[in-house]
Length: 301
Ligand SMILES: Nc1ncnc2c1ncn2[C@@H]1O[C@H](COP(=O)(O)OP(=O)(O)O)[C@@H](O)[C@H]1O
Ligand SMILES: [Mg+2]
Figure 1 (cartoon, rainbow, N blue to C red):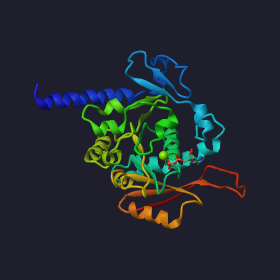
Figure 2 (figure 1 turned 45 degrees about the vertical axis):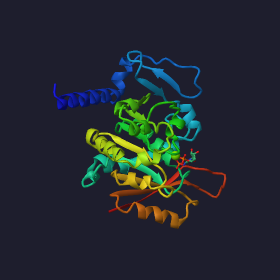
Figure 3 (figure 1 turned 135 degrees about the vertical axis):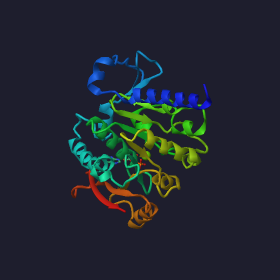
């Protein structure tokens, strides 16, 4: 077998593995998927193993915990938040696959960023991923690219799993090694991986650019959401923003100063679509109210 044939076979194998991880029709899989083994030792999220393949770990989303943390978990009392994320995702999905997608390169790749830490990137990225995957709009791949302050895994409870950093750092970790299936059919996660001395350099490396390109070529039918580093803390957020089709700029309402927001907007000037999302808005005069108000401002070039 020639080197090229070998490489092609490897790619085909990886594709097949990955599709097997993603392509789980919720109804069909209800019968096919063996009941998970619940690990009672873990506090919040249970790591369950598919009985057919013990390499293929599934992370069981703990809805109660997410709901308690204020996430728009189905069946929770956060019905207002669920409705708001429905509204937030609509233009994104439409830009990615609807009529709005014409002319936007890589429109299915969405970066969630903000000017500063703590404005709500992770909160937004997870809620959006849950909303899109739960309501079966599209399959979603959620990638924790805030490698300096990774928190997607922490919130979901995915621990000690290799992630983006390991993939970028070494030749031995393949794409399918870092993808974690979750108990929501259609939602897969790539954790940030271990903290690394050069994690921010890795994030702006050529390999990262190739990785994003590969995602867009291989999975044009999936929404890929990146939880990104803040734009003003380092340059990586800006670099990532140039690789994706849509950017959500999360702005902490009544907190982030206008000149700070404008600085971020300038950094995103070359992006095709930027949506501004006002997070943590107060709805009324009750200062104790910490609500889920969102406003969408949009500009597109
Ligand atoms: N709309 C919101 N409602 C309630 N809590 C929120 C909201 N947005 C963010 N938070 C909380 O604020 C904190 C910071 O948000 P996070 O998403 O971690 O910020 P970032 O990822 O931008 O650093 C977290 O504890 C998060 O759960
Ligand atoms: Mg975060």
